Length: 216
Image (tube, rainbow, N blue to C red; front, side):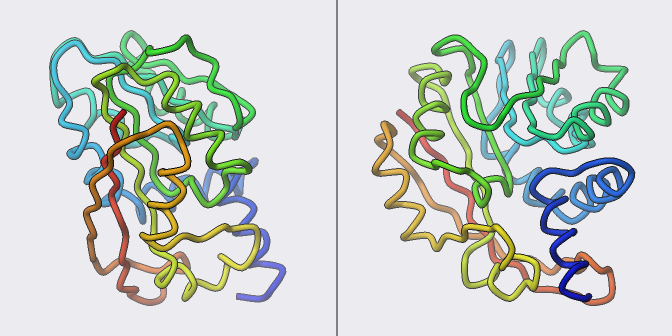
């Protein structure tokens, strides 16, 4: 891909917009689905819980979440109007259990200790003030709640040509340091590896990623 194309791809990965954004959302759901499902599994969802997803994309995985226990309530937040609209459209059948909220990416528009479980996949690269945002997540998570943060490791992400454009990358140790600067006290690291199709769909990539289980 040419430099301009890579910039456009990077912009749409951070904040999908318009028709191109819908295509990117579909591609992200397909390439990230294993990371997303691994994150959902790690949450250990139980009956009657209230779940928050940060950066839901088109939320093509919502059905999987709601099938894991009884009487669940889901809220997804995203900075992309395109993804907000697309997620609502694709998940019309689940509107009694799911709510989608458009936000500006800095403050979570919820009361303290609202959610039992919170997760986010491949969004941390775009957080403007990561420690402050981690503290926002801490604020809205219940006392005994679980927060799962999943990200591609720096060593792997640096091999992708589009990540030089407005991505902030982290190794496990860098992410541990970041979390330790926030109000969170405990975390467990789980490393995963898998083979996936590239964003162009023309090659197979060996992806190394981390699932962090974080608690108060």
